[in-house]
Image: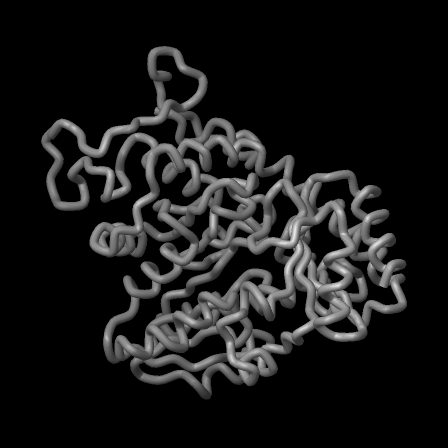
Length: 386
């Protein structure tokens, strides 16, 4: 049996690892096998088969992820959206009703407002800052509530304490997308959420070279997700498991540097006259600073800001940069910069974008691990050339 560790730094390295080591190998090998010899397993989900996400590479990751959030169980998936969609479909059925935060990642927002509706699952959007208003949208068939720890792309910090309390009071399943904070900054399952969701493509792996997801939380819900996932086929292949497992080892180091660098960059952006607004909860002046300070042990490496001049000026600014790459995704070692209107939230209508407060010229910046001073110098040059 593996020893249990208190610190997340040690958990990232040692939690869930096979003991004894496989022929003495310090690194977890890739088990490139689609099927396994029957060993007396009982039940469909226990059959050792790659589609059921239960090869040795999966099992080690599942144990490690569960321990990172001090949760009962976890399951890795083929993408963040596989984790989100499968989890929602595991706790909701035709005729059920969902409460969802009104500011969400574009893919999630689309799935909730369009795909769930096609399946006969109803929803209402809630302002996560106004818990007194949630009860008005509660119905007899409401089964779950869904929020993000830090919202994409406006970096809002929801009233997470009230979400958990509201869910417990009304017997709802509480789900949270914890991608922007990762377990290093916020352990959602430990905080009281039933299901914590991650796009492991982002901070968890951190190298912009895989797509993966995870659901972490109470065992009774993870079992449902595992069963549904086996039918929907959101399988993470063993080699990608290996890369995610390797990327996780440096998560704490990366995350803390990115948080430190992001704060300095956000403070710089506040001094730029052509920047109308900076969204970063690490800033003392940010609306969500005190809440983020209460909940999290850091403020993430994500921020967004808006330039005067709209989308055309935003595009010129981005094209003048030399270090950040104009590319979707986030949380990797390379700094990435995008215009959500054209990427992560491109599927939303003009009305939906307006309702969420996302302007066409909003810029989202994922701070990597390059030199902070080099990034600031690069930003200065891009601003000066406008």
